[in-house]
Image 1 (cartoon, helix red, strand yellow):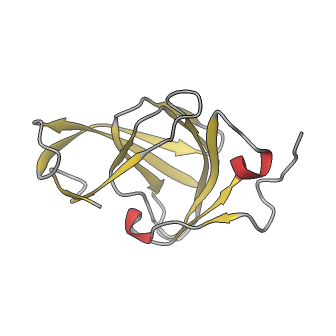
Image 2: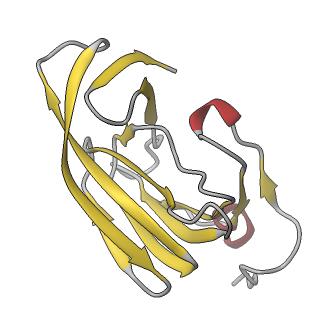
Length: 151
């Protein structure tokens, strides 16, 4: 049994800044508690930061822990791997305590809606199969109508 506090300093996970629109940092909770069925991160989005559009090969649960944020779901138009059209299908406001489930392979983005405050959430990435690797595909886009390439 391992114990950790999501607000403690340390255990930062290195992230690719190309996956986000502004400053983001995260704490790797799953490595502390030795989780084998999911990857768990506490993610902080500063000053209106959000993820680029992406999808996962497994389900994801987000639990808002601070501030105001949003989750946007997109519908892919066509069957190309890059240079395809998108249409926003849903926008869900997130505030402290809100929980959302995102199904595998759903195009989405999430992050802060306040340019002056931090939004944070816990992301639980549920592995698609026992001991399988959780994969995320990140896209460059205009967040409105088109995806141009895989990052």
